[in-house]
Length: 283
Image 1: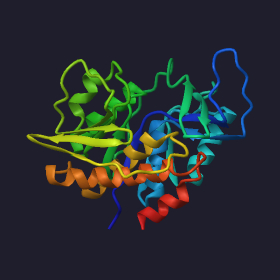
Image 2 (image 1 turned 90 degrees about the vertical axis):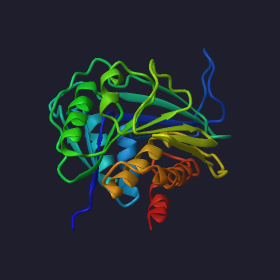
Image 3 (image 1 turned 60 degrees about the vertical axis):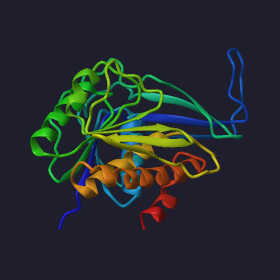
């Protein structure tokens, strides 16, 4: 029997991550203590988490033929992620994120071009998918995938991040809307399941008339880069294993699983240091 896959559709960046004693202020130069290059971005990080947790991870994104894009592709392949590049002959550099991580508490700053100015439209293969995860960074890709998922009965989980114009339409196809406490929508979210994370504070949720919250276990924070993405990847894997939208009584268990995955991420320094420990959580 085949294992249902998580199909992630969205942004892949190349992350230049440097650890520093203090985050620089305008006009200041700071020497870092370490430098890493790795694939990043919400959808890509979520896919890496899915693979690390023992799931089947497929990522549809924009990379291209630039050397930096190939670096990201190799990193994702090494993490067990199957990548479909919808613009394989694009010669421009991929999106690059400059990330600084403060050593004392894992807090970070991020400067990224994201997917600005990139237009990509393609049909997404959802064969064998148990969950579609979208982040909205490639709007046409997200909408096409979400429409197909609705037709095929594949649950759609949205990593809402910040408000994007595409969400005005995309939200109508979303079964599980997962966002932060700071996410602001022009209208009330009425998706079947709505989950709001709040860093170390309890995660709140609603599913129809039911609702509640799930505590977050105290964890030493060493690195917060991609922690939210890992949370979404774990949540998508939990949905894929169900193969349907979770019932109200199943939502707390899903959140607890995602919380534990995010805790593993923030408890390890570096872009990929958390992958092997995450595999232990999967077992």
